[in-house]
Length: 294
View 1 (cartoon, rainbow, N blue to C red):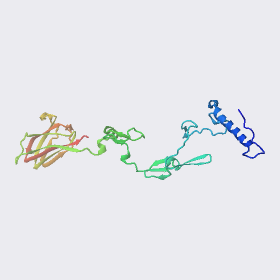
View 2 (cartoon, rainbow, N blue to C red):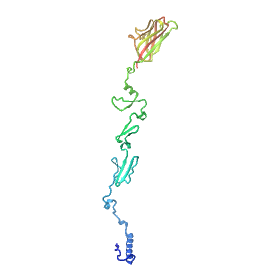
View 3 (cartoon, rainbow, N blue to C red):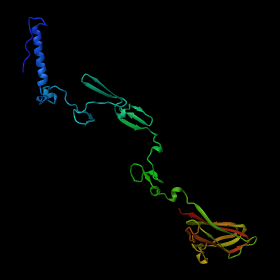
View 4 (cartoon, helix red, strand yellow):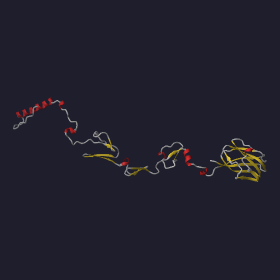
């Protein structure tokens, strides 16, 4: 390969020596353009260090809270987005600023239902702000409660579970209700017929604790009480013992001792009231009082 000769000295440009020197340069350059084969350019370095540059910037590893985002040195663009996020570069330093600190970018304040504190690191639900609509849906016919016997999260209790939890007795709701079962005999202006019997079905369970007998006028009468379970009672089914409903020259009488009575009553029992004797009175109302079992 020819070398470029030194430029002419001591002569002015435009002389024959200068023209000859320029022609030689043209010939050499043209020869290079037509004679160099690009296949000769092999083993070209593919990295900066291949060219002997050892102070190149190392591949940057981007991370999110300590977790790598892809392979080191592969990202060519970093894009910062979102309200409250700003990024700036000064020489070789990139600074990312996220306003508000923790707590999802919220500064310490009361936001209506939630209060943010601790530099945005703690969130507390305000008192009296959780409405029923914000609670989880409950199964039908249930109540919120805790039947575990110890401290625990609320649970949706069924009616049966609530009953078991309350374990109430009649004494918890006050005195037992009082019910009456009775019969009226009207003689139509005359004394009722001895041996007359009236029947009535009791709708309640409980205990007989009193009897009453009332007449239209002062007089005397004795009335027996029979009872049978779901059938018509007869004289042998008397429950009054020796303490039958009795008027003795009086208009009103009652008794609560009932020491000789059979006092237990079951809903569906049939009562019968029988006039054993009567004088003067033309109308009698007879009844027994039942303390209902709950």
